[in-house]
Length: 66
Image (cartoon, rainbow, N blue to C red; front, side, top):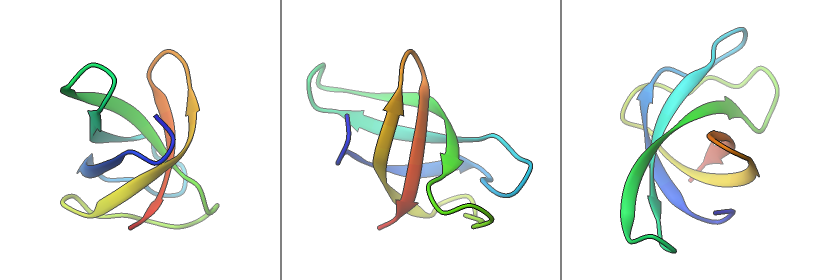
């Protein structure tokens, strides 16, 4: 999961839990995950491409700008 890329589908920012669609290589699918910024205080608009830097099962990821 770490290193996978995706696209923001629900705004990510301070005090917000956003959403990203991530391509999951192991299952050959694209899935939605709850998302937080890897850099505290950073915001990401809908449509922004991101990379997963941390994964917390079952459906939470921390992402950074690609």
